[in-house]
Image (cartoon, rainbow, N blue to C red; front, side, top):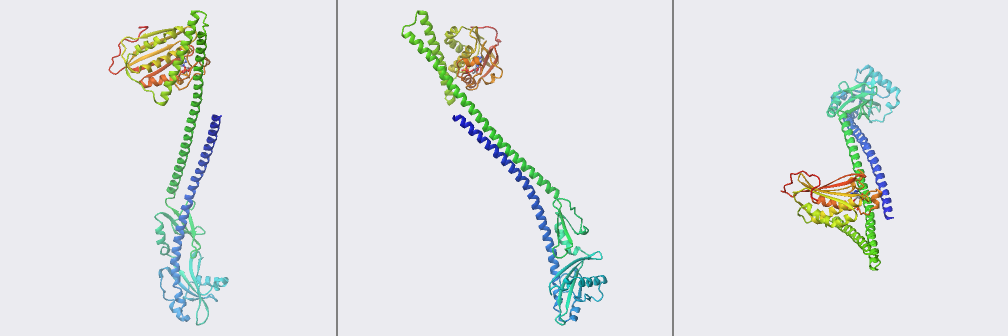
Length: 526
Ligand code: ADP
């Protein structure tokens, strides 16, 4: 039940992790995309403010020049005014083309004496047509930017009255537009190192500068607010392409980093998922192991109890039967001893307490000694055992008990996983290069190719029905593998279903030992 809830909780947690990963992914990607356009917008805005600043500076220059007009309005009489008009009143006189004095009501030009005829006609018409021009509050400055006969003019208008006659006059200052460099060059020059700049009118005619492309990104344009209001100031950054490329690169890098982050997150989640799966698998295997071990202990105990009771009650009919009962008791005790020592070794190994006492060992002698102890069971189970030992084998560095454990487990498996009749086990001990090899071969049920790599896993037991019928705990071969690894050896399995299995362990020969030159041949010394 707890396991069920744990799995459920893990599934919910997995859902949450996936959901939040996807949400974070989408939000971050959107943010990155938006940040890109924010960058573009801010670039356009900073260009716009650059243009505005430039226009303000140009208009300030004109406003300063405009102020000089006030000096004329302090004249007491028209004659004084006409005299004064012949001289500039400060500022930069190069900017001014001509100053005019107009009679606001009549629209006639009072100064200069011989004005440009076209202009004089224009002023007269405008003043007659537009009441606004005549009604401007006295001493307020206005600008008139207009094209007359296809040529642009900029006038500053200042209405005023003379104390002498209380008459309304209009002072006009015409700016010198024949040489626009005087007005614009200093400001444009400041912008030009990093921008293309020009001035155009609303009909797209170029007024000043080199024409800029209006269709490109980051193009900005702005009208002069007060003075040259029929003109547009246009600007395009010179490195627009580079800026765009950089923005694109940055966006790509950000997207790449987000994707990598997401992948890392998903891989981390995948690792957690895998380890969780592994943990669940291990828990199941442990549970099964406990079930198997309990069963393995219970069955022989029941048999031992039953047969010893019979013997104690003196119910054994004859000597042969009594001997058979004792055999059973002995065999089951053996089996239990083997299981308990396996479990103890395994638990020591799990706790890291397994310690080996290495010494120089003649492998064949250790094997022979333990085979003697196995003799009874071999006979009992009618196993035909052969032992081939190559003479002159060098010793190995090993732990006696550990090697006995290896041998017992391999033999036990060889007997367990074989047919009832005709069991044959062949043990070979031989030298191969700088190794001494122990091979245990049986003619039992064998294994499927996909089972072979798994047999050394803790608690692994084949799903094969024959195996399941045989008692086992699934720790024998994992112990064998641990011992072999600790001895610096290797273990190799060859098996085919129905034909039998062969386990070959290679222990490194003790250093300095000379391996025999004879190749391993048929049956040697039994
Ligand atoms: P146990 O024998 O207690 O199940 P082991 O670790 O010794 O545990 O073996 C693991 C599994 O490997 C066995 O359950 C069986 O499926 C398979 N196996 C081991 N030895 C042999 C063999 N000689 N023949 C066939 N299968 C074997």
